Length: 367
Ligand code: HEM
Image (tube, rainbow, N blue to C red):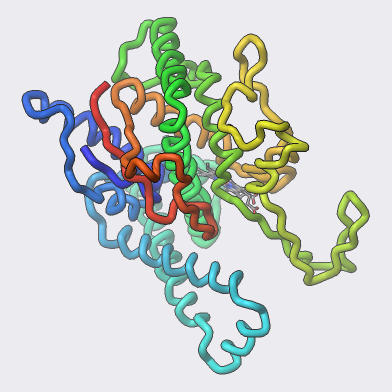
């Protein structure tokens, strides 16, 4: 099968897995290596990871609301990025002449808010008639107190936006890096097999939390991939109040000043990671017993540090490990590139999230 792993959501990754299982069963008597020119995943990318947030809608079904959400999400982030890239003077001039995109942004945001409000309304209705379930995030938050519709709507939006492209970006770069280091792939599969053997579980069954937690090497490989390609490659902070702020080195940041820092650049600094900082080497994260050793978030700010650190960090590692281990134990993911491009890095595209400009074409075959 041929896929374009472009910027699918995490859900797309799950869909990939489900599809592969399904396809494998259907194709038992057919060729094992089918090349289907399909942009299936690119189409699937439109679906935000809502079943995780608010269980319910089966991921395979098309939903026009979700499609509208997806295109508004793309449009809104493009407008916001455009604002970052345009010099302030030019931006103000455009606004003055009524050429700005403020109205367009407002329209796209309205679609996003409507979608999230609909999710909340449906959940309230389900709870009222006793079919709300309770294991999804939204239900759990609602059970904690009497929150306003607006609060819950913003919570839904926040989680969808925070988790949508970040995870898929990490996974695309991960699979590309692993394709360049086959021994890393072999170690991941070896680790999965020994975890399975220890717990007496069989390939293809759902991993338990405990099994996933024992996958130190995979944890290291994912961390290493995000060191080189952090999904949030550039971060900004705006000094909004008071007389300004002072950075640890004494630099004064006045009110209204924007400070940027780059997890991408920090991930490639020799002073932090040593001479081999440019190499993809998961072993750097492991102690001599093979146990994962986390780094300070101030050296590895991929999930940010301090009080506004990513709230999805632990969950996202579990998600990514579940998908990678489940895919890799049964399938081989080959990156499909021309011979002369084999060594070349896919062109990155800096938006709010660091994506691969043209996606990552891969061919999947049974192991
Ligand atoms: C590989 C995937 C992810 C990466 C690299 C990542 C990274 C980050 C970063 C750098 C921030 C700080 C942004 C800033 O303040 O400028 C952040 C914030 C946040 N993330 Fe993530 N994230 C990921 C996935 C997720 C997921 C899956 C969720 C939840 C479903 C999530 C929830 C959040 C939330 C709620 C915040 C805001 C925290 C706050 O401001 O208090 N993230 N994330």
